[in-house]
View 1: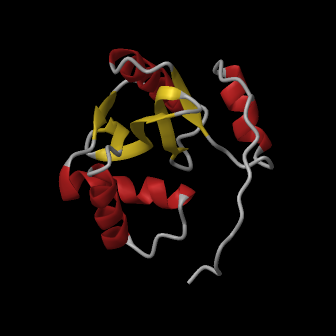
View 2: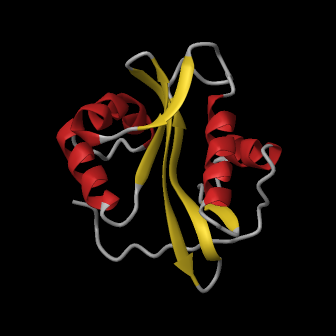
View 3: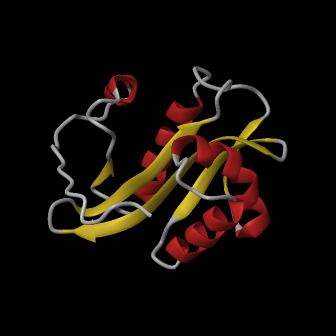
Length: 148
């Protein structure tokens, strides 16, 4: 990981605002920074947290995650979002975030770390396998209505 990068959670509207340029690269359906801050804050009531890689006051990568429980995985850490800013890739930031998320999962007594990615995203799938994740689940989706 590059010198000067610190991993820490984003708290409050100002720090979530600093995350927007990076999350927007992964979630371009967000209509703007206000929607991002509102949605991330609302999801926080269900345990959503944002772990960011900070270079000073600038966010260069982030992971949105939550600790969950279900009958498939038991008690687990689910990664909603994992993204590195354009121009900051291939510096070990995503690997560092995954390592920190794994440590958080261990601290939270999780049995596993789980994330989803598009079946067509070969680069992400290759990276996750390289980082020790196992391609063990096939997911399906069924759109229920047209996007607004």
